[in-house]
Picture 1 (cartoon, rainbow, N blue to C red):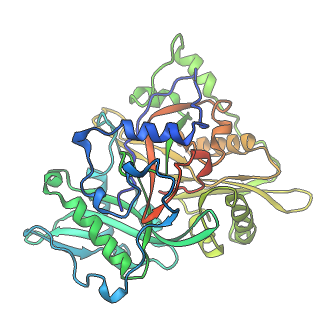
Picture 2 (cartoon, rainbow, N blue to C red):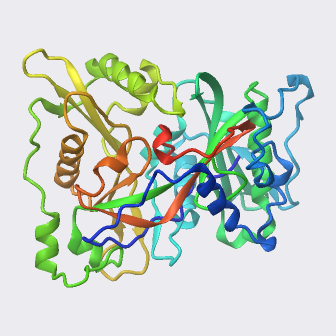
Picture 3 (cartoon, helix red, strand yellow):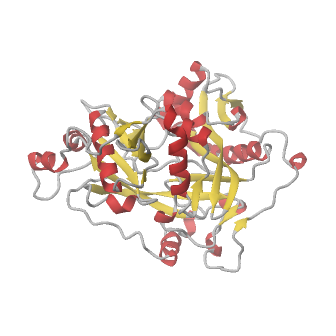
Length: 429
């Protein structure tokens, strides 16, 4: 199990776009993965784990599904793994203001940065509580490492329970996230023992599979998605180096290019409310059935994950003015980045597309309304992965391609073929 961190927090946005072809064959994707590997990049730790291995990519005789069967709980290691001498395990109570602040500070100063060290994810404390307290969460899966003498929190990893459907099978999994080690301790090889420890604690709850993402290639992605960016505040994005002026473009032409209407255009577009949870659940469950890998969400999940929370997640529904039926919805979550070393700007306000279902309203129109409300809320950029049906609106809605990839993984579950991004219906935070 690994971290859900993309190295893609800064990319170039250009008005003149070439859309990536998402219909690459599985073989081409497999070749791309293999070509990223050199002898110096062998993954010794991952080669010992029950995950898809690069050497097996073209072996069609291997069965799809569970790689290693569960063992009796009594045979799971009962004691935590050993840490280097100066460090100790702690369970992080994210309901505690003090602990939550410590986790926030560790991530804010040490978590995912872009390749040029200009931007770093800045998850808010409210976001962290939302991300780590879904229905049925286990406090024991929120794991920290402290220095024994000073009690300083220097590393963190988490898991949360989830039901994820793979083809027709609904599998109990852990979603593993927020693997973060203090920059000064990166040479201590803490990450593998942290991954083993969260795996041990997940096994103690009789859960044997997991999903995770990373900005690096490990054995073996089930698919690789690309971030795309829609500029909402182009002047600021150019000022801070997130994007640049396109060829033969002036600032005034760029501002005009990305200008949005002052208000949404779809009749019945409004903020989602608690009474909408059953209708939104029906919409999202039906929609997600068309993807090979997707979450299996019930009403409790939808209430937690999609119902709006100020500064964390925004969701909007289309209520038919005639029938009052909820026909469509869109959602995005708030994940700012710290801007490192800029004289005037300290925060990049980014909205990330979450789950969107269009049945009566064209998806393109629904997403443009999402851009309009994000702009009204003073977001600087709207980010989208090219999974689900997102590729269909990128060009027309003036998205620019990001430079990095976000790779999706399953632990102890094999897929026979690498998926196209459009076959994935799972968004991990």
